[in-house]
Length: 534
Image 1 (cartoon, rainbow, N blue to C red):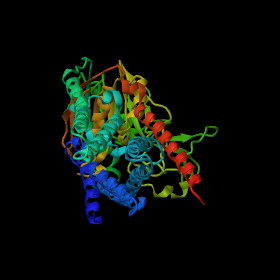
Image 2: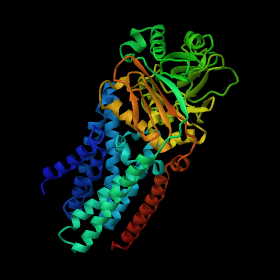
Image 3: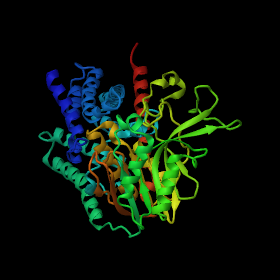
Image 4: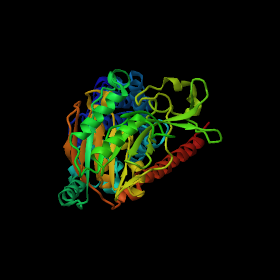
């Protein structure tokens, strides 16, 4: 077969993978890897003609196509970041397939496919938990808008979806290989197995979706969408006072005596000193807003905050100095819980975006920190919070994941274990403009609703703001790029799902089995080399 045809197969897999993030049904992922698996099989059968490096190049084509078609919109915020993310992601993904190809050459296709299964899930788990974390293209995320068929995520989390996608791809490809060469009875049995693996979780999920009933325990919320252009208005064209006025106007438009919470977007408030927030005019204005009109309500809103260190206090590694070095302080991307009289409470974003909010491998790359771009009001590596924090008011225990954090299932399980019975997600997706980026980001919140069976109120500066029920349905939403607000309710739920309790156990099991298989492979390779005549 010509290199051109193999390239077309590799390209096809990348395109099929991307379609799930571009509005097509996520079920397409169940066959997305088959063209690339064909390339893998062909090159293994002709391994005397092709070195393993050749397959790695074809797999790199697949992942460059997938990453480029799904992440190109990052260019609007940072061209360098977009290119970097696409290249690094593609390279790492291709290494997984390349290594599995090498293993398959030496240990056989079945061992290679099993190795691919565990190594890919291990890779995705790594991508959640290392210094250059970027779990955006976790395979299971591609099912985010198919909520009726993924209700079982409350048991497995999104990585269970990844496992499902990989299993089906591998079994379907084996079925294709065997057709015409294996006895019909064996083919029929494997076909039945594939059908069961595809449809069993779907049927169970559809039943769960239809029968799941939320306990009525409502929280009344007004979600504000001030729609402030992050490029032209947020940090230059519109004053802090004008921005706050718009936030309060859209909040006031739907507030009532029964409103429990007003929820505003990420970094809606500017440079708020945490050591003494009370004199801050923004906090005073919000307190006056509550006291004068909504005495029963509270305000939850994002802010760029600062915390000063005084002599004798332990200084964090992310601390910075004022221009004259007289003040040592930390900068945070924060969520603020503002009551009428009680002290302001702060939660600091912990899952910081590499290259935007933090310098990855900080000790080794500290000299590059000045290149971190400003997407939150304050540039440079931000401070973060070590422990989860759940705010509480009259039985409503709420966590406030900030932007990118809504993509981390196991991380958010910590808030559920700490008692969170609802989520308020705050974000500012306007940096990406009108692209698939904000739609993809919104869909990940639906996954969290299913995994934890928690109602979600999501406030986006430019949209989409919405209410999501415990089945992952978007029950009310705003339009994109519109100054508006919406009101509604979400139900509190104190029950802890299997996934919330056990986290990404699918990945931890996979990591152990991947390590075991890799060890077996390496030991046998060493033994075989020792037996070779010199």
